[in-house]
Picture 1 (cartoon, helix red, strand yellow):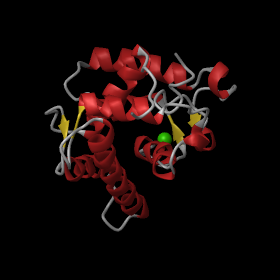
Picture 2: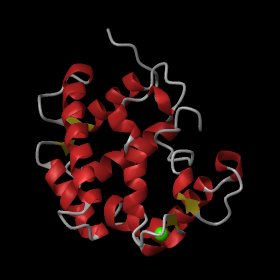
Picture 3: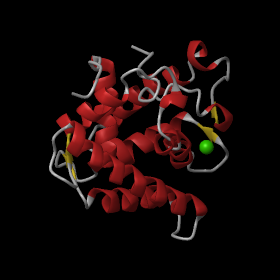
Picture 4: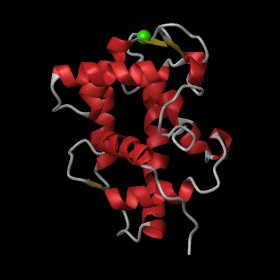
Length: 194
Ligand SMILES: [Ca+2]
């Protein structure tokens, strides 16, 4: 039997939103069409054209990401090939987080994801994420059906956590690209932030 950890409610919440990000049609199952839909949505949001290096890297990383994800879903979550349910998604993470002490413990494909997410959120490309960019990201890519009031409040809390001096040092009111691997993405750092 594969070793695993019990996910905390905080980790499950973060993972739920990440799942929603990966599954744009909200049918609660990641399938072979999810990646195409996700990439379309990302490129529409970022404005990256097909020949943009960021778009190429984004497609490459997600291709590998989904391939490994489905393999793991089959092995860890007992899912059908080429799909992953939310329960399977939790099972994968519960297994991957077992014994993890830091970012360096994750596989390469997963370690590349924070940088990519940073580039997606930083729509004006100034290598800083401002709160407005974070709100737009949540609105367009994570929870499109939530009210503007909810989004504003939610992103303010998230932004405050990401720029929390206890987590990232005193970086002021912006999230700098150099800090992208240190900031509390919640997901990657979730094992220590509860
Ligand atoms: Ca920016």
